[in-house]
Image 1: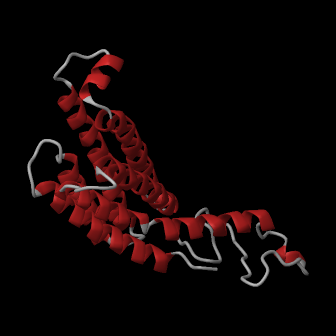
Image 2 (image 1 turned 90 degrees about the horizontal axis):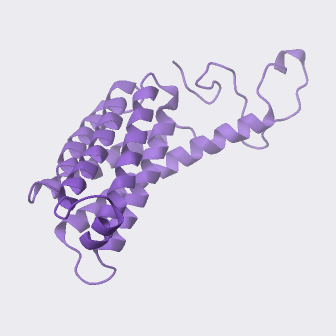
Length: 222
């Protein structure tokens, strides 16, 4: 499947003029081209996906800082929330970038799984154990197990996204391998000791840098 500035993922021709998009057609041969609104929308999505991929290495930096221990302000909670927010932005952009590849279903499944794990992980990690027990039908002492399950679900989602990157033939497959290794290390971060979580952050940083760089070259700017 070819993706370029002259063709969309579905194979339909696309005309994008950098100076002024959607010049009036002058011949009957141009009547099959996409409307102006579609061209502008597609270009905006491409630009968002290209820029938002840089949030993945930024999230890996904050997560690595969290694994090493945050001393003083802004505190571990703020750093963890910022890392999670950046990670979600970048993973949505990655799934959007792979929407035109043959692994789009795997990428979508990975994104939804990661979002489900993050939804479960956020209240468990942010609230005190007493508050979690009081607001959920569970016995005391089960919160660490729930935290491990949430981290494992997030890791499974990232593993699916890494596999989608590896099999997409759209970006560098080595970045997909790095992302899968990072998912394994970060998914087991709540049940293993150092330096495994920090190694996972470093792997995510390397894979994220590669994806952001390759995605920026893959998606044209105009």
